Every structure is written in C-alpha cells, then in structure tokens.
Image (tube, rainbow, N blue to C red; front, top):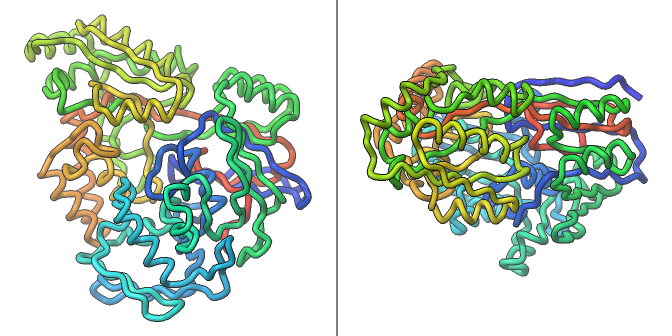
Length: 500
C-alpha cells in the first residue's frame, strides 16, 4: 500500500478523491449523515447529493487537485479572440449507462433542460446565449458577454450530462433513477436507507476501483462512529470532534478539513430583519468565538466574508465582534414593532448544528429579542420550511463549488432570485447586481478581484447573514483507502482517479 497523503487546497465545498487498493471485487460503504430528495442536477440540495452525483455523472470538465477546471469528456476547446464563442469537441466513444452515445446533442440537451426546469443551478449557464451542434462531437456555445468562469461552471457537479433518452422515458422519475456516463451507474435507492451504484465497465477511461459503492444514510453521529470502529463501514462523513478522537484512538485515519461557511441567512422581506440596524444588532449580539470554543470544541474559525477563505477572490473584510451593548443600542434605535425572531435550524446536517442554534437563540434573547426556535431534523423537511420563507434567520452552509465567485454571488445575492433558491432571504441590491455582472464578464483578473473585494465589503456591511464560522469537519477512513486528495472540503467524494 502506498503511504497515505493529504493534499489540501482551494475550495471549501471541495472535492475528496479516494484512490483505493486494487481489490476490484470489493464494495465500499460510505456513511452519510442525511438523505436528500433527488439526484437530478437541476438543483443542488446538499453536499451529500453532489458527492453521490460525482460518481454517477460525467461532465465536459472536472476539477484537478488545485480546483482548476480540466478536460474530462472534452478533447479540444477553441475560444474566440473576443471570448464570446467556445467551440468544444468531445472525445469519441463515450456512452451513457443505457448504451446511447454521449454527443454534442446531449450537451445541448443538458443545458436547455436546466433552463427549462428552472432550478437554481441554471445560473451556471445564464451567460450562454446560443447553443449550436456543429457535428456529432462538436458543440458551439456563445455567450452574450465574456464569461471567464464558463469552464468552472461546466465542471460543477450539477453540470453533469444525462441521457436524453432516459430523461424523456422517466420524466419526473429521473431524479430517483438517474442515467449518466460516469464511472459508476445507478443501481437502486432504498428510501431512508441507502443508494447503491455499480462500477461502469464501459467507462471511457480508467474505471472505478470498486465493484460497488453503498452510500448509507446514518443520521446519528455516534452510530457512524461505532460503525467505523466495528469495521461495518469504510468511510464516515462529518464526525464531530469527540467522535473523531474515539475513532482515531482505534487506529483509523481521521481527515480534518476546514469546510464551508456556516451562517444564518437573514430575511429582508420579514420584519424586523428588514431593518439593517436589526440585522447588524443580531451580528453583534452573538459571541461566535465562544460558540466555536465551547459548542464546536474548537472546530471552526470566525467567518470574515460572504466568500469562503479558500475561494478565489476572497478578502477577509472584517468581523462582527461580540458587543452586546452595541447590539442593544442598535435594537433600541431601530425600535421595531415586534422583536420576535423566527429561527429555523436543521438537526444533524452540519456539525452540532442544533446545539449551535440553541446557543445563538440564547444570545439573541439576552440582547432583547424573543426567539421562536424551530429545529427540523429531516433535511428535506427543513428545506421545505425554508422555501415557505416564514423565518427571520435560517441556518445554512455554503461554499463555491465552481471555484469562482460568480456562481456563489449570483446564486445567493442576485436580486432576480429574491425569494427563490438560494436567495430565500430576498436580498435585493441592484448596485450589487451590476457589480457582479461586471466582475463576471471580464477576463482581467486584477479588475475582477478589485470588484469582488468591493462587493464583499458592501455585503458585509449590509449584514445579509448572521456571520458565524468556517466549520472544521472530520472524515474517517479505514485501511482500504491508500491515498486521499482533497480540495479543502469533504462534500464531493469519488473513488476513481482524476483524468491524466
């Protein structure tokens, strides 16, 4: 066996690649903390969803260890001098799991389907104004304005190609019976229990190491811990600090990764958080450092921007330090008719999430708010509650899974998405929209960075979130795993080698 190694670089929502010993008859069991409703790429609902999708789907590009987009299905790219026309040639011979060909028509179908379905991930292709199929292996994408992040968007897990034939036949059932062209093909989904995928023997490059992968849903963190310690699983995601110490004491490997931004989105469309003074008061009222130390047992660092620390263009623009006196003064100045805050929290989706929410609720009460804390253990049910928008704060973890700021900012803050995924907080700042569009349409990195710096400062001052922390997560692996590559986040995992 090769020496285990950890490569930690660019992105908090990242990519974990597990290269295994060549025991191709074996299966791999991965423990996930929560289930999700679909594997349809039109919507991103959780990191666990996209992690499973990485096994099933293939894309034109993928990410290397430094979060650079590199060709996956792509054989050749030609970009016009004005940056508007992308002529993309696919490698020949790739097939979907149903035997139909992966071709230029399938690329066109995937993009048009995303737009027609209307999911939040259509932002990935918003810049594309025209799609033409030149021949069976060549598709030409035209953008209305230069869009330097197009490669990154096409490497995103939700840019996965899917079989047009299967999609038309399955209709609404496609999301629970996906058919793509990745190294593993979907076998079964036992609701509440597991998803099983089998190795794709017809994969166009080196196949997956395992004959079968079982993604098992185990919500209780202690159960995930004991299953690893008893040898009943090979990988366990999102253990807590205490569980990680217990697993490590048994001689298993623990991977510690600085993960995503954890925050509470504040609702601009519901009093009293429609008032900037109230939003700022909420930020000053909560002692994030004490929560990190006492609730998370040190597994985190305070957030300093709406863009994650390892994302390109990030600037640590500041912190809202704990200042209960200032919080009370701002609340008194705002003098809202009601001081009741509806706070939505998941349970067991993020590390110690409901415990953190209990602590936040306590701090807000001390500052003079009345808090209606609603903890919802089922992730799908939690998202349904968020979509109803009857909240002042709801907890969320977010990263930038394209490695570029455009997707994060456009998804979370664009005024056109106010009240929709993932701008459920109804942030509407036309001046920010204009800046995002300008930054997202220039190939001049220095200019882009300057604009993104200004955006981060403006948003931080406007307090669209209760800024909390960048959480540290712990993944346990057994000795089947010989090499670990990670892009600084435990959300996307797959068990096949990166393209050469």
